[in-house]
Image 1 (cartoon, one colour):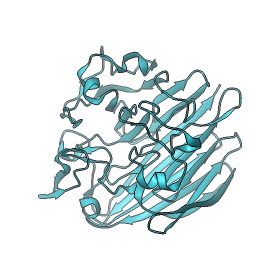
Image 2 (cartoon, rainbow, N blue to C red):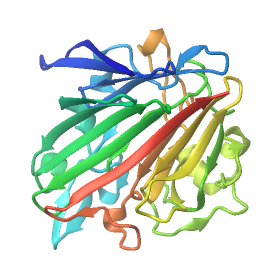
Image 3 (cartoon, helix red, strand yellow):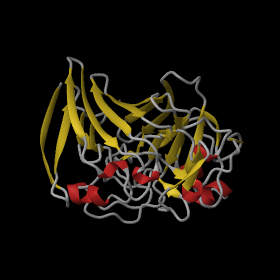
Image 4 (cartoon, rainbow, N blue to C red):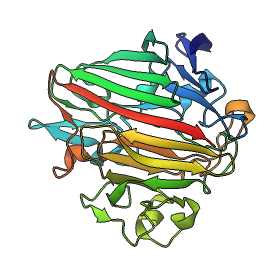
Length: 352
């Protein structure tokens, strides 16, 4: 295994950004940048040994400074939506950015993917890890507490991209970290992901209002287009006449993962039959958002000169449920002062 690095350019503020590429002995390569702790590319062989980048992204640093679709982004302090862009904690109401209608989305206007991170590299024989860390100061984005955050990306010889999130706050706060990589296992520039087949270990999902805020209910997937308990193509039901799909313009829903909790377990699998590529997803988080890129407007200046369109990528965002800070029946995203936030998500790749 090896790791290389090179200059990615300078931000609009004049800060230098670096690209780091970790390679294993099976031909898999993953590239990250210390700007935003973003995943820039994931290069994986297909069944014939042909290489392709399976993560949507931009050609240069300027694209990541804008990055409206959140390609490859580290999301924080709170991923997904918070109703009314506010929450109450210890009797105090905290007001957040209204960057998604009347709601808060992915932390606000200045997300965690818009900062330069400190970097540490750890190298062993069969795994290389890169840790990105920074201090998110008290009231950044409107959230209380000085939060020491780190995200560690590792590539293994088993073709696993391991993401470990860690955070500690000096005050009670809320934390819900995830990654927003858009996957296309046929290749980032291969077009629609509708023929990808997906399996999700979930008996329920969280239905939403029209502005995609969970109602607080848990609906059974049985007999609905939301059921991915048997491997099926995204195309099969995405345009069904079913209210949750009509509200979101496709899949953009949190699944209640059927896991024991506390341990990292397999929760999903994605198959692209033409290339033979397969991705398994493991996590210890209670929820996972599947988002089929319904709101991708044509995005230009992407890698290799590509222009991405609606449904050209699919996200699998492990998380606490959206708006859990305002929904007592949901697993809590509250992080008590001095306590540690730890979670792990693994994307494991194979090809046949």
